[in-house]
Structures are given as structure tokens and as C-alpha cells.
Length: 407
Length: 104
Image (cartoon, rainbow over all chains, first blue to last red):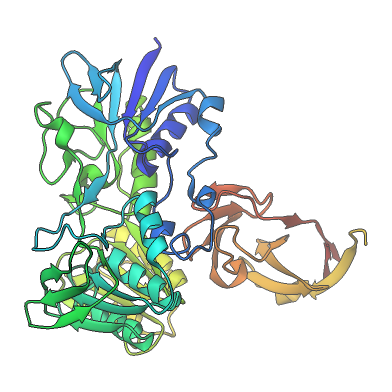
């Protein structure tokens, strides 16, 4: 029987789900609803090649804009969904339209955390999430101008690199000891700090912004440590929060996003979630996790679509992401929060290393700087969830493909 | 100039289940050896131009560009996984004695 498949969030996860529904022969309507006006696009270029003006926006589109109509995907862009009524099986839109569904996917992603510090509403302070955000920053990007980057997570680190590459004078500030501290830890994070300093970024760690100063427009950043950083503009990258406002009274279980099982299912029958917004159960790690990366959006969007079609696909991808900064390619795979041992292949003080986060002799996660192949070769070892020979893991002479997990 | 087969490399120089980059009259071509069958394609991922010979991981007839995870079928150049959206150009090959010839 034909069904109405509705996807809220014209994101990478949402678009991938729509495309997968059609590829896998969905019988019925497929409707993709998104708050942004643009057709679905990929966000990685927004902090890198697109921000630097090296590629046009079209290159970031998930599919050419004509694709959706050509493939029987109805699109409602530039219109926010405001409420979901699970019992009436309706999505309500801000223009008061009501869209009925039989199967629903929530792929609303996240929105930037707001800075709640004095002066935060001055002009010249930017976040980065959408192409409009990127365009606003691009207008400020003139060589020689002074910028303060607040937050050295992935967005802050990539933006700092792009701004340096365009010849701006960059100061980066983060409350942690290093960039990417929360994910990668101090030893690896230190290498990223070194990378930025080698490219001329002034880094300030273990300090935070006390206030922004300026008349109408930001002119300086004052830190709690007492530094005054004069600047022409500011980019803030302090993370996102899952976009779940419309779900408040839906009865859908919310906890750090939309809680779903390994089949991308919420507690409400017929309603699924995928991408940045989905706090999913991961069978390999036996825990819930919410992952804000490109690869998860693609893979989970596709897995959710298959589950919406009644194909019981378990979503158990080894999470993976990359972060290009300057000429360096940083990659991470797996999942870890703490680690007993950091097993390093190569040297952390060089421009190419692999570091594995190990617990109970098992590799939970790996990070590589300019070691893309090695990261990929470690992924099956992570997936195996078994102890490996750590001496061989460390030994550059051992081909990682021959390093089998012990039984 | 019309495309023609050019003797490019000795087959013995391309390791089994490996990829080797070869300069064929100024064109950088990647050659994959899939269990004794050879496939030639442009040595640049269509996403961000990483060398597929250097950064590519071959499994059967699939090459994964490890820079950002794009996957291609070495037989056809077709994209099997994003972020790449455009196929890589493939070149006809033939074996002549101990030499591999590539049509560029």
C-alpha cells in the first residue's frame, strides 16, 4: 500500500534518506521539508574550501537542485516544521500547513550554541553553521584584518586555518589546554596547537572570553585572564545543540537529542531520527551516542530510510571523520571517552602519526595525522572489539592489515 | 591526437591488489592489479584530487580514497560512495607480452 514518507530536515542526513527511499523502491510519496532555503548541501566545505572562496556553492550540494523533482521527491524548503502530532500522524509547518505521514524521519540537525556573555550581540560576531553564516564571514575575510576565533573544536580549528590561509591575523582562544582537547586529549591536542602556531596563529588556552567590547560593532575581546585582544571581527565555534524545539510536546523521548535505537527508531512507532540530532544506541560500544559528523549523516540517513521501508538494518558503523587544516589531513575513527593507553605509531612531534585510544587491550578509537590509509586499516580492528597485539600496533614495520584481533 | 595504446609499464611492476601511478605521455594514470587483471584510471579523486595510487585502498574492484572516503569501481570509474559525486575517467588497457599498454 502506498505510504507517505516525510522527512523533517533537508540536511545531509535527510537528503540521503530521501534519495535512499527512492533508490530502494519506496511505494508512495517522499516529502523533504527544511527550514533553509537552499537545496540540501554538505557543510564540511563551509569551514574550508567554500569559506576560502575556492569552490562555488554548487559543489557543496548533495544533489543538483533539479534532482529531487526528477526523482519524485517533493520538497518544501525555506519552511520550518513547528510541531509533530504523533497521534494524528501530522507534521505542522510554520505556514500552518499540515503534512500527513505514515513514516517520519527527524533529521533536523543542530544549531549553534549561543554565547551568553556581555557584548555577545555586537555586530561582527559570527557563528558558522549555514551557508549564510559562511557568506557573512567571507565578507569580512580581507588579508591583514584581525580576527579572534573563540573555541578550538573542529569548527574553530578549521576556520582558524582557513583564515590564516587567506592572510588574516588570527588569535584563537579556548578554555581547554589544547585544541580538540575534549575529543583527542592533551598529547594529540598539543600537536594541533603546534600546527596552528607553526602557521602563525596566536593561541591562548585555559582562558575564556569575559566580554566583547565595542560601540555597535565588536572592537576587542577581553578574557577572564585579563587579556585584551583588539580585533576587526570574531568567529565563535563552541559547539551545537540538537534542534528539537518542535518535539517538546510530541511524546518522543528526548535526551541529548532524539533518542533512537540501533534501527534509528524513536519510542513512537513509525518515527525515526538520523544525523546530528539522533542520540543513537551503538551496538559495538553498547551505549547511546550522538555524533555530529558528515559520515554519520550519510550512513545513518541511509540506514534510517531502509528501516522506514521495513528492512531491519542495524546501524553499527564505526564512526569516522576527517578535518583538513592547512595541508594536514586529520582523521578519527571509532568512539572513546577515556583511555587507559594511547598507543602511538610514529612520533607525535612529527607531521605524520597514528594514535590509538586503547582500553582493555582493545582499540576503541584511532586518530591519524596525515595517515589516512592507516586510519582506514585500523577501522576493522575497532569493529572487531577484541584485544590486539599492542607492540605490533606500535611497530611501523608491521602492516596493519596483517594485525588481526586475537580471538 | 587520437587515443592510442601506449606501452606504459611492465606488468611485473604492479603489485597484486595494489595500485601504481604511471606517467603515460604526460597523463598521470593509476593502474590497479586486481588478482592479475589490470584497470587504469585517472590518478586523482574527483572530490579533492588526492592521488588514488598514494591514498587509495583497494579491496576487490573497489578503490577507497582514504583522504575523505570516496569509493569508486575501478572497472567503470563509477562512484560507489560519496563525498565524490563525479566518476573517475577510466582508460582501456591490454597486456602485450610482459608489458601493460594503456590507451590515452
